[in-house]
Image (cartoon, rainbow, N blue to C red):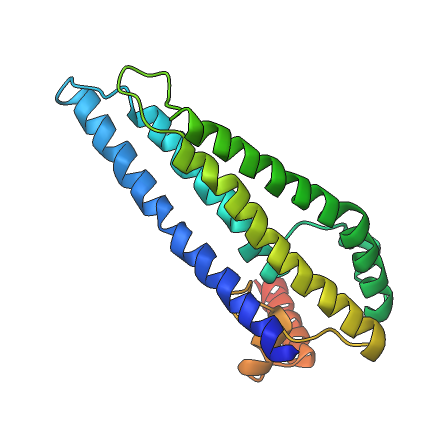
Length: 206
């Protein structure tokens, strides 16, 4: 079971990192358009639509990646003080009551939305029209990826309720943990306190 959970984590991570390259494309596109507009005096009507599509793609496809890293915003004021089993019960309830219905509705509606757009070959309303249906396909795709990762998170909750400990996640770039950093450089709290006292004494001597 753990191998399945980590495999989905890695898949979500791979998808998130792959679509993260849209940031590079978006940056280059904006820089090129600024050059064309202000230096060559030849702006392009379709660039604004392309910028919106790229940003929307980046935003939508980041959902499953962020969930796989447990990075979505939550109210940690009380949650962080609870036991893992209690946290899992809360998370499981929220996943079943809110997450699954909401994301399933998003995926279903997005699929209908995409098919309607594809059927009429929908395009943007600019002078140089761009096809819209590839962009609208991102909605059900992102919803499906989020559902898959959500199922993994539900399994994690169930395992935590049974065992009392959270299952491991696939590692990735994380914020610096101060306590881990202290351990790596062999610094103790007592050393930090002694250093602070020494700095205070030096300040008083001056």
